[in-house]
Figure (cartoon, rainbow, N blue to C red):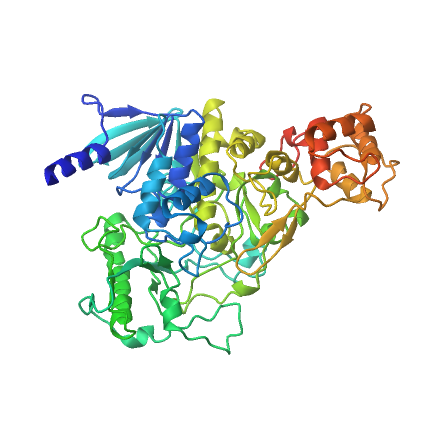
Length: 619
């Protein structure tokens, strides 16, 4: 039986290569089958692009699975695109939303091995091929094509591709190709962020070698051998569960609550604890593979010390390292949890000012949004005393979106960058690094690649609106509106009009789940509506806009001026009455939903092209 199992494992994990040339041609090569690489490949393949993923491990999902960080941070109220599809698969498997609300850190927790299986189910598509246990060795440009030399179980193969997506955990491909990037903290003088330190440095966030423990039952003793260098003083404050945003003078100490932080289904526990826990400061970004592997032994050892502390000092000896999660000899994850990577120097760089006040900047990056997030700026620097103190708690951000230009290098062709390596500042990376954001960044990278390949363009040349439309067709958000769900029949319309900025969202920083609201059922006054329209259209100054609520009569006058043709009130009402469930009162004020529907129907401002800064191309 074991030989049959080994044969099946070989068949499913080892790619089949052409026997003679050992060459493989594809349109899109995704390097890294992590969180973003997986969703990028799924999206591109669904859009008709022949896609190949090469992944060093035998799993998909990266930090979600292979690194063991199987507790989703953020975006619970915004099930965007493939993130929503993945979560639904978890719901179906475990028995609904409540079945995955097992730990207090998240609304969605799952076993890493199950996450891997569900992602592989999503990744089943005729256009998608995945090579596991495959490493890239060399990448070169051959005219308009890429040549990638890879090692597959000790054998060399050459892949030819039109485009490459760097979905590696640390941005290794763009570094190899000498695409400009940043590492570490930025200077406030370079980014204009008042919260940033005075001087730039190369300090990154702490990383973690996660451990998944399993409850083996009362009375069992699963205590591991005492790890080398164990010192109980190192973990003295591990039961401190005080919220960083709370009054730090009122400490909350509760070991039983600490251990359930990352409680997973089926009586398992994700150990990914920052305070006197298994975070460690280790910067391996610029190291080679062998040096990285050697350095990570310290991270593994540190996590084992923490496990030993939990078992011996805190009484959790019945919790042992899970023997049915990871296909590794030590039963630890295949990779560490990297909170920070290299960061691309892209067509644009998203900074914290763009996030906190998207409508008040000189640019309009929000118009180019392709991924969304609602988690606050969250950095882990407790293990490095040399890290400058930054008041992350007081950086109040609403739900935000990621601009498309953050995935596109400012210099160089044929490459798209995903995962945590996109073009954001160090401070913003504390929010854009979270799992749902990275999943949606990957989906956007796949859509961008598909649009570029189909139109025979470079990523920097695409029509941004075409990429956004592909995402909207996949029920992915481009604007972070908490009150406009994919199930809403007007989801696409409201997202499109929101992405023009004619009707703006309202941002509300809210604890650990920030919000931006569209308020679709609320009215809008004539003055605000006219001002929004003037950002796109030449509205005559003599068109009087008061503080009165906008109705069909005013909208007809405004739309006529914008379209440069007569649009009657009756035409507007005809469209609304065909679209809305109830008859629209001709004399009542119009809601933002109704105005968005009319705007989209009669003017279609979303079709007006924007550049990577969100500026209108026709102005």
